[in-house]
Every structure is written in structure tokens, then in C-alpha cells.
Image (tube, rainbow, N blue to C red; front, side, top):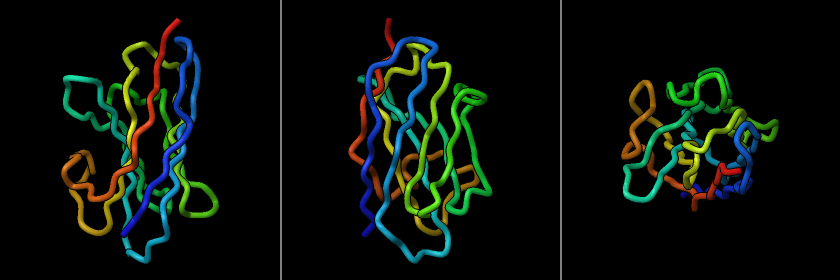
Length: 126
């Protein structure tokens, strides 16, 4: 059982930055992927970015490429989503998710992630 705790949401002006954190409980799985998703009311959950534990492989959706960055902390269990140049259309509830073991490549499908965080609201508005 992997538990996730997200933090870092809030209100930011267009062009601003925020960093989300996702702390995972320890896991001994050989392969772990942490994905970031977002969702607005009435729409499907949208994949944003993903990172393999170890940080050597990262993936980004076209909508955030060049603006967002995923990383892993030194403690191996904390993951970050750095969001820069935020736009009003980035407003959503953001979730981190974890999958241990097999997953598609690139890891963009929400239904392939087993563990999910509670979500945190990001609002981009002036």
C-alpha cells in the first residue's frame, strides 16, 4: 500500500509559478512511476507529466512542455511538479499518482496508476 500526500496548491497570477510536492510512502518496487494529472469539473482527468523514480526518464504533455518540470527529491520519496509561466487554462485540481511495476510507455493513462493523492487546487487568475 502506497500512500501519497500532496501539497503546494493555491492561487497565482498569470505568468506566476508554483511548486507542487508529492510525498510517497516507501516502496520496495523495482520500478515506480509518479504521474501528475489535472482535472476541471465536467472534463476527464488530463495527464500532465510523469517521472520514473531515479529521475532518468521524464515525460510532459504538449500543453505544459517547456513550462513545467518534474523532479525527485534527494530523499527518493518526494516528487515535485514545478509550474512556471502559468496560464488561466492551467486552473484545475492537480493529482499525483503512483504505479509500481508495468505501465505503458509513455505513462499517460490514468487508469494504469493504482495509487492517487488527494488532489490540490491550482487557480491561475488575476
